[in-house]
Image 1 (cartoon, rainbow, N blue to C red):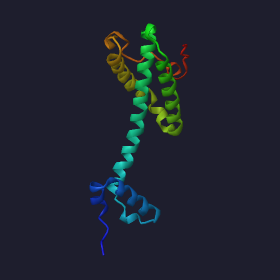
Image 2 (tube, rainbow, N blue to C red; image 1 turned 90 degrees about the horizontal axis):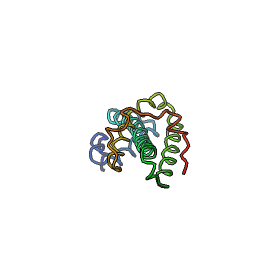
Image 3 (cartoon, one colour; image 1 turned 45 degrees about the vertical axis):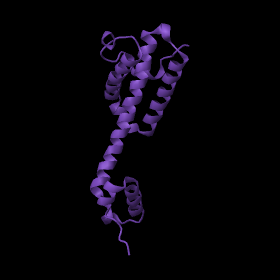
Image 4 (cartoon, rainbow, N blue to C red; image 1 turned 120 degrees about the vertical axis):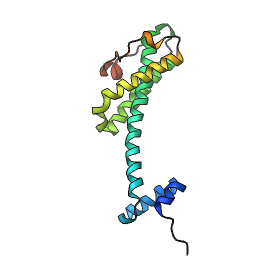
Length: 148
């Protein structure tokens, strides 16, 4: 008879198997057998990932809006669709995670830093010559028309 591996060992050796075992234990109501310490860590990590997703998408959106407004001669269809896609995904993300809304202004500030980096990487513009705090209101970020 092979005894099941302790869940803390399983966590270190096969994360996927660990997740499946934790789900089985939860479904069976075997709460005493759960790897509580690692479950807490993973749940907290999931929350951090949701915040990171918001910041990353805002960074891409802001970077493309900066390129759009500060390089009008280089505007492209690709930029239009990147702006459109990021707006859609951010709205969807906030709808699915409404508790992130109070974090939005902080996420915009971090996203703006990321957007400046994107501008520095993808354009001849010097990010230091651009506003050092986000010049876009929430309305601008999510609804300002982009005319092509």
